[in-house]
Length: 79
Image (tube, rainbow, N blue to C red; front, top):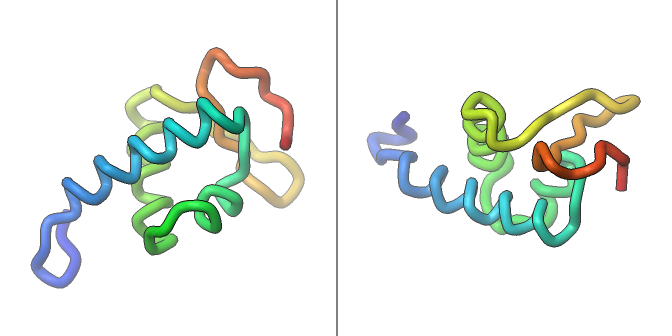
């Protein structure tokens, strides 16, 4: 994973950690809310969310026009 010749592995890992902290604090939340809350480019936040979903660390599901992300042990409600 490279952007402009720079590895994205470290930033994506840091963003994954920030996403997990937000989910532990806020509970289920939308991708839009995470993009707004975190001080990273939207493309990197979305990459990090995708990596967490692929690894089975978080769950994502459609709710109306949004995608809600949550930890597996959290209720699936929409914030």
